[in-house]
Length: 450
Ligand SMILES: Cc1ncc(COP(=O)(O)O)c(C=O)c1O
Image (cartoon, rainbow, N blue to C red; front, top):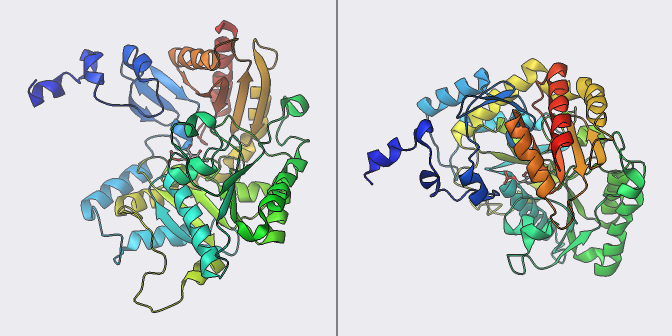
């Protein structure tokens, strides 16, 4: 087929299974999708528009990233202006003003002492970067025997080898060989027997942080470089840390000279009703990983924040030499940087990074009202995140969740499912009436799903 002919067949009204074939879709049931495609063609505020003209309420901020909603003028204009003015500047040994401006503004959101930032292009790259910084830091301060990394069961830290290695989701890991050597995992914190239907942080489970002491005893502290956790584990199905758990992890890391890394790719930028999880939980790690909300999902970008002493430790040796041998062609790309600045402007002007706190009670009441509906075995919430866990169908784990996802989409609501857990994380501009609409639709879905 001639090139122009192929393009013409992509017009929305002529979509067929054939012209959807070339694209191998990520984390998608490709064959199912291509038989019954779900295509968005527009987005504004709280809504998507589908190829067949329906308006779909966004219950997930895209993929946990469009925290300020869609089509925000400040961001759109900043991107357009920058693309015209200067599309790209080399990221290595050269710079441009916008990336320094963005960095200087971003670090003001961090607790005192975390005041340097390294740019990446995604959450997965932020994870790799954070792990590499941790390992290299231990080496430059003369602690080179600290080569181990500790993650946690059920953790999601993206899809690259380091992130998969410290991650704890078996289906994501099992195809890819031995992964990184020298990694171990703490137990996860999900405990339905003791904590089902908790509002906010569970009462039970702080002692699970003692699992780190078990690994320290097993491996010896002198071999452990860093511990990485999501403050709230998102992609595995929204696991909220038990009261006191993160504090214990911090204390154990301090005791043994281990760096603590928070993966805030989901929790960052207002998701919990505070700018970051470090604010929400009052626990300060050594390294904070972010992506997604940094540009409101518009242009790929991630940001890795580090404590001053980590940055300073690298700033030695001959000045013409590169201190940290790492970076990406697109680290701090001008258009992404402009998008980041437009995003911060939007968050600040509309008070979005703390708006979740004003909605949190309404959100909690709404989501917990689904208790008692068929198959619901747990509901949990924190800030503007929530999850509804369904009993898996006998012999077909994940089927009930997937059916709920498709049914919700047909009922004009975008939700996210992991197995049989439904996750909700609406844009921070959501109105209470839209929360109610979301929950009403979901109630209808839950009543009709087998
Ligand atoms: C906690 C966490 N870390 C890392 C990632 C990976 O981000 P990305 O998909 O941008 O590579 C995700 C993505 O959802 C995430 O939730």
